[in-house]
Length: 261
Length: 262
Image: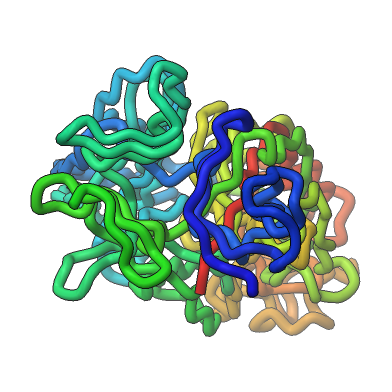
């Protein structure tokens, strides 16, 4: 009978919790068919519940909660661009602005997530929408080797876009590396680690939310749709639509996650 | 107990806190060797276009101006004709993968023409590593007039790039009452002869066959001219629109495959 096992092979530097691929072969033989999930996990994904070669979104820094004071965008009315007898003026101005919000200082560009409103901030999230005249503030996030930034595209019309404060949560994840000085599995009386530090009880990881925990969400499919020149963004079930959007996008399935400190 | 079993799961416990649990990992990302790194170039076509023209004439003024317009339309996969933007397969993942972590580092290598004298901003951070939740990105747009987006998704084991562009519907590019003969298509071109009797051609807008566009660019401005500056006259402002709102994006797409247990 195929078993679910938690085992390691030091000579192959691998630890895994997995359901055996079959009941045939010797458990201690790396090359047994039953050990396929630990040997070639990418070809046996549904059988693997943990593998020391996988990445589990370990936090490199504690989650940061940051309130950004987004500034106003003034009214703009252009000079006349028409001809004698026909006055044409353009109203409004657009401002593109990169706002550093968090210094991670890792020296490499990490994986990151920025949460807004209880869901991961998508690229092009509408965080402010005033009236129906097109005054909006759209946010994306990006990273470099030192910081996390918000890219803000803000637009006024013949009326100013007012200032607004918004709160974001920033999570930065390590590039996982195995520590060759650690054994495949160990407990030092305080900390248990598996896979030469692949996971460790004293670290923080993104994980599925437990009952009564607050959470944000990871989306499992496309998070935006455009129709009628306008956008709808749906992340974690949160819906942000421009006033003239005419589509019917309902957004993707998502996983509530939490446990991040 | 620092390591304990819970059913078929294992937990690593630190003090009173569960540091990690095998059934709590939202995503199992495959090792870096499975990362798919793709250099990609993709484009968006120019919009469908038309134009409008105004002849300003009084006893002391004879001037004309023409503008290009972009027409409403929805472009993307599943559309037909000129509105079809076909899916592009940019890579593959191992069988069984049901999640992709998508990062892009892209630049706009060919920019659209200015829109009403203004640069069209690149909303996607350019030449920076950007995480795309769900694989979606808003690349560029002008207010709530037009938008361009991409989605990078899995279809089976194929990594698919989908492009979308959308121009908002607009009943009249300018007030209908401001058009010659209320914008009737059959009466937009001056047939020659008198320009002001029985129905004046001056101090009216005319369109080039479609009144639903958005003013996008000035084609020609004639502030002081002689002659009849009505559409169809040899003296009128040009309607040769040289704008091009196509855009091309180039850069790297990094896809880290993963698996999510049900």
